[in-house]
Image 1: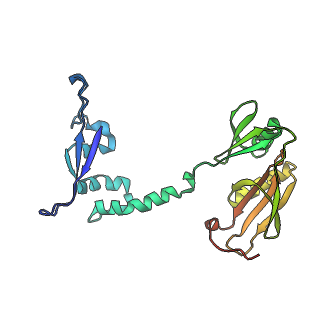
Image 2 (image 1 turned 90 degrees about the horizontal axis):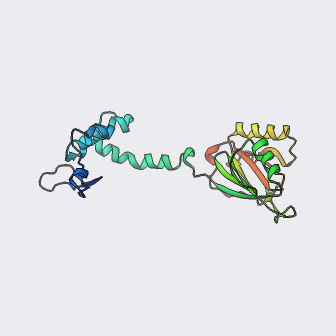
Image 3 (image 1 turned 90 degrees about the vertical axis):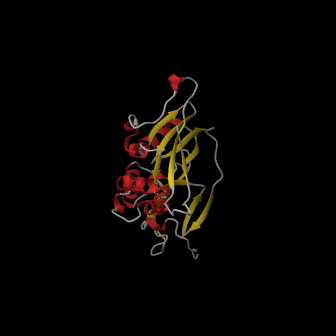
Length: 243
């Protein structure tokens, strides 16, 4: 176990901060006492150069790892500063990367588990996860959709809202896809004999919100929308839609 203590710039020497590695030992018995030494530093992998000295200057650390962690940085006069300046941008790009979006969870009421399986697993090609007699998980493009059995007479309240001259059923749920994915699913649904509530088409044409959209119902009457922005960067574009 290690603790890292960073000291400030010395007022007298003007030297850069240092990072001190304090080795904590387990002192229950002498046999269980372990310290990091030069001999076992090889077990630290790429971090070995860092742990070979009790007092490691941050400039040295930056030069040692800069080329590995930030190959685009190249040779700079102050590598540690370059790394620290890069951290906010790196964290920001990681946070907003589409591959790091937290999976969404939604539970839908269904009248028949087997019909739900045929629709979500068969037609929409969602991988099935955990299940029980009264519910089943589906992987909807990386998101968790759970179909829960309810009484066959159950009907949720439904409304419609005028969106660019489409009478959109509310509530509804679905996916934002790429344009090719949208057309592939639309074709699959057509071939599967699905009757659309709103046929696949473009709405908000020529505006920032321009998108392909389609609405349909699953076998239990749950409203689903699949859409695709013609310009994906505009998914969260802020503007007021004049009706």
